[in-house]
Length: 210
Image (cartoon, rainbow, N blue to C red; front, side, top):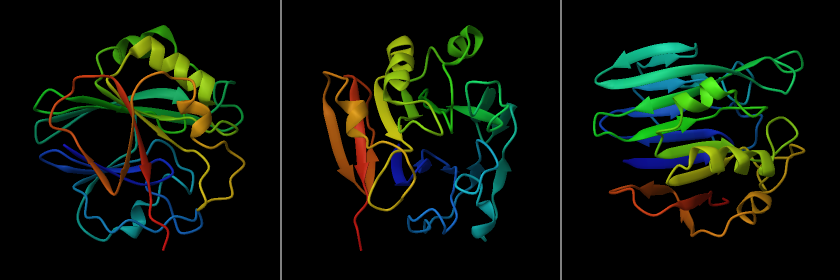
């Protein structure tokens, strides 16, 4: 499996099929990904997560809860909320759980704004990899993200939706999250290759500034 971070909550995942998650538009501040996905998933319909229209190749768009099966890949969309008030402030959010043919299970939490309920957490209890927002303000913050990680115990923890030099959103830097842990921190540029999942680690991506 190869994971690429394009900024914010947008990832490319290659594992027999190419998936692009939560693409943003040019107003966010990151470069638009040069990527040709087979599948695009969108956790909700805000401009920094739903810019599938920028990609001109043929792809399958998934932006609803429920079960979706494509080419031996099972995708489950779990309904959650973008805030702590059941969507009254910022609407609904979808956590997408990906179950690949090689057995790897990955969850992308989108703009999750609350601690999920017990049923949702149970659906996620077997994941190997989690992509989770940590910046607060619009989403859960670092402490809430750690609470979820402590419950689910994934082996690979990938923070997202945090402050960088590319964006001016009023959210926190990733250090507020990783400082809460006493586990290995792997810092990578461009992409992260997964050949086996063993020790628990946090993977922090860095995008080169042009």
